[in-house]
Figure (cartoon, one colour):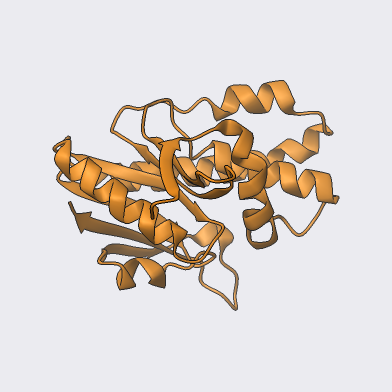
Length: 197
């Protein structure tokens, strides 16, 4: 860990996050540029205007290794302004982006209803190197505890490695099915987790 450093997240590192997330989260339509853009929309809808945006980097060469983003109750997200400024596709291409935003907003609302004012929500967590995410999260949990936060909440779904959170000390507090993303063969499950800090 001597060569690793936790810093404020640099928005220039979003493309590295997209390299990891696009294959998992991209829509099954549109060209490669639009698919990547749609995932960036998801990422930006999980980044709030606050000081709780972090990255783990290698001090030797500046390599971006992992990131974690948090939100308190009442924090603001400005992804809609980014989308308005960056959108250059046909009008129908906005529909899936709006669907993603509404899903994220709904799940954030469900999560924050379970939180007290002394709790904080992790809104996005990405790791480019095995073990780097665990190092970042462990360190940030200690920092959040020292700041007086009581519990860390997060939501995820069946498209993500939700079992990772169980293995890392989180407790499942809510499980549901999101009907809009479900079909006759597959229930699209959502999960809300909590961890004492």
